[in-house]
Length: 346
Image 1: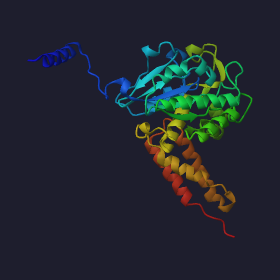
Image 2 (image 1 turned 180 degrees about the horizontal axis):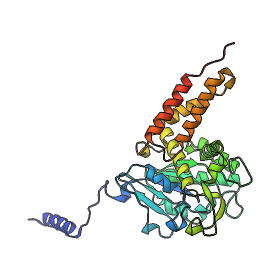
Image 3 (image 1 turned 60 degrees about the horizontal axis):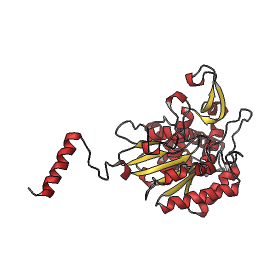
Image 4 (image 1 turned 135 degrees about the vertical axis):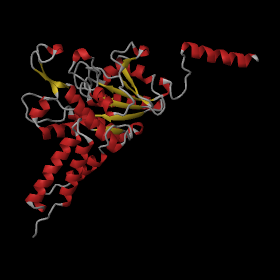
């Protein structure tokens, strides 16, 4: 046996005896395509001691197909950056670099972006969901500077071969307001303008969530935010009336809205067939129904029936626990109501 064969045999024996797994593209974690999330408290990871406060990424994970339960773990190589967690699926991974209270400015100045950038490889994706804190005088910046940070992030991510998806921020839930409005609209508009100018995909969570919250009403939306009574949860013994952050059910609704949009618009191809529930048919029919605006053209009975079915479809579309049967039934009912619209004579 020559020296090369002897050496190869030794490597195999050592690997078997000590359980060392030889690296390849499918088993090596570092070789997996990765989705990075750079956001603030709405997407950040929260430990169980903070329950029921959660970020949408935590509830987005269970909406994806997996062979078993996918658990977050902290990266040893990222220990210098607070709260970074990774989720490993069979063919891809999700790394959450979000941190509460952070803005574009502080994401850059604290070195967090540089740390994340080192890990980005060709064909990775990055969701940039930084907006909520960018108006704050202590951590934020003017709109023009905000746009410059976004452009800087895009350019450096693209140089590494990565692709960017922008995400606007959900509204606040002010106790003294009955309706919801887009939060920091000037920053939302700036993000959408940068996306348009640089031809980046985006998820307009500001509009999607604001419209949906207004549709569902204050009583329902109060159950999504961190509005807790004293003694309701151990971590919040004194209670809390928080108009910004979401509890588990709120995180689930945001995750559902995001999942529906990603399926319909296919901004992240590696996730196209990875969702447990396909909502595309229901979404497409709901979007078609939303184009019908002129109530006066149709009979009251047929119009009111369509609106009823459309509202039901909207509710089911963004209900995290909705079953496939419920989605199909809502889609078929709405489709029939559209066909049943009758124009007024004369």
